[in-house]
Image 1 (tube, one colour):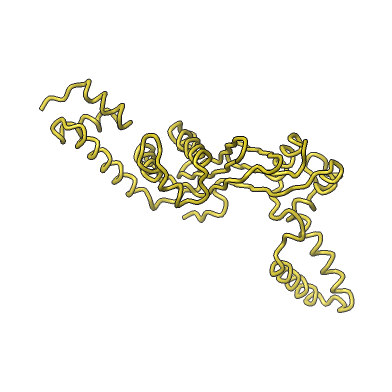
Image 2 (cartoon, one colour):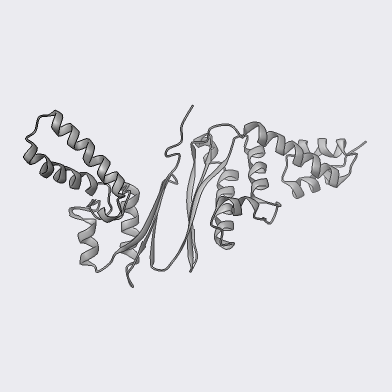
Length: 276
């Protein structure tokens, strides 16, 4: 049968599929729009499934916020080239907006969330995979309640950090601390947040090393304490030298301005993902 260009255009506007794909679907369905939409959906699903096992270590991080909440999100793809594609960036921004607007807190809720154009976010993800030609994974996100002053910082769309300060008037300081978190990669706020098992294990390792070096037993405890403090200072936000002024620590900076950190989050695209 003859397929009119206006029908192909109409199906494309409805589905966002390519012109040739729309024409083939209409031919296969004998001009039935609903059947053509199903055919396109099934083909998109098939393309997505064929790519779902590929490693995704590139991608983007984004931050969105409103008066009550902030969302930090990492979405991965296979190549940096794809990460710069408009389709991919639109997908990431829309997913972040969906999380923020619908008060979502876990991946299961997100996967099942309805969008304007798709029955679920998972269906939207598979559509994006079929169009982009690469696997896409929504790796992680965090939504936080803004019961303090929010600081946010993104470096090159690859590193993002959120900081929440307990202070009534410190927006600029919050942003500076977020930048510091992005640059210096602290793991904890202060020494008191470091798990006891981590402290014990690191102390044990240092003690074994010192014994192998035949250090006098009476000074080993003192050496271990000193090394542990120095080592953990670099893991904690409070103990680190402030990136904009290395002569002071972040702890002193905050103390001088009568502020404190309630929480922080740092995402680095692809961090910890095993590459084949």
